[in-house]
Figure 1 (cartoon, one colour):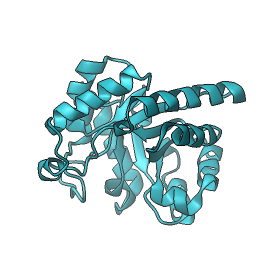
Figure 2: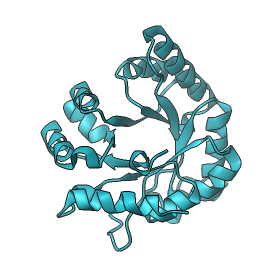
Figure 3: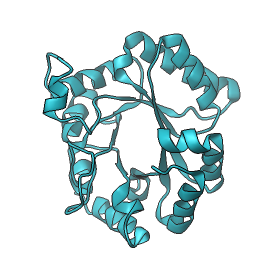
Figure 4: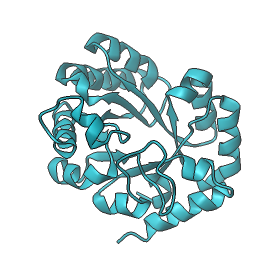
Length: 239
């Protein structure tokens, strides 16, 4: 995988026009974008079409979680959009995860399109130890993340979303082909914002991340192209 394809820029904007302006500004410097809840609820399928028309890869980050039948139905609709990665919450449990896997596979086959890679959110990267303790899990954060990653793999999913701090343990537990998408990535010296478990781009890749998700360090930079280029260069230099 080329370094340019490992960087996913988060389009966390309240309007489609703001997102489109950034994509046009970055041009060929960025190939892969994340569309999350805020932007998708504001701009809907039109923003997905725009990105695909621009030749971009799309991670549709809606973190679905509901009863198995509801999630399966939603994923059939979303699979038809032609996105490249889509996600659900691992804590939805094995029946939901299995229904999600079946829905994506069957719908893609029916439409004769490439199935999006289906991944599961483990523990949100904004969660620190104090917040996690309030949930009353028996495991630590790293233990729970690995347990959920194993569950996702057992249910046939392609990978997980997890913090870069857990990427190495997931890679060891789930093997070389398992997709690990890591938010909570901040270049050295950048503000953490609302993220708690973070690493630098190089650190995330060294730990085993397949893709890194970066938002504000690029989208709020004075020179956005330079910020993206610097992160790609950092990834390329990882040995």
